[in-house]
Length: 209
Image: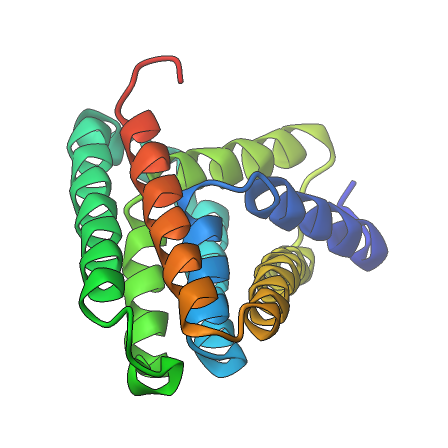
């Protein structure tokens, strides 16, 4: 028996929150961008992450098990690529903070489009996301099945859940930025953010971490 619309929505929301809520390097990046720049930049980054989650949810519905088998052999490479990109971002954040520590905060704004594309790309580098969504879809099909309409609702709900959580992180970062109004506060927030991202990047490539 196929799942009903309400059940598909609830399941999709739970799936989206399940993949989004564990805060890692991506979450730290969103908070850091919003605190150092603006709500608009943080929201763009948040929607980049949610877009990637939504795309992976679509792929999982269309054939996640097959794709998971294809990317499994290169998952280690993808993890190291993500590590390198995150470490580069952490380094750039620290260097920019040191270079401009005595300048006004408004002098160092980044572009929302760039933030969106950067976070979209970084999230797409995470092969665990497609495995996660693929496993959930396969489990539901084995249990009670998903109609085409229910699948669409499931994907939409997963995207909404991811977007709402990532936007919450952006809002938290924006509030933090309002507290850290001085150049010293923003400098130290950038340094701490850089250190956190670097540590989380290292954890990506440590087995069992």
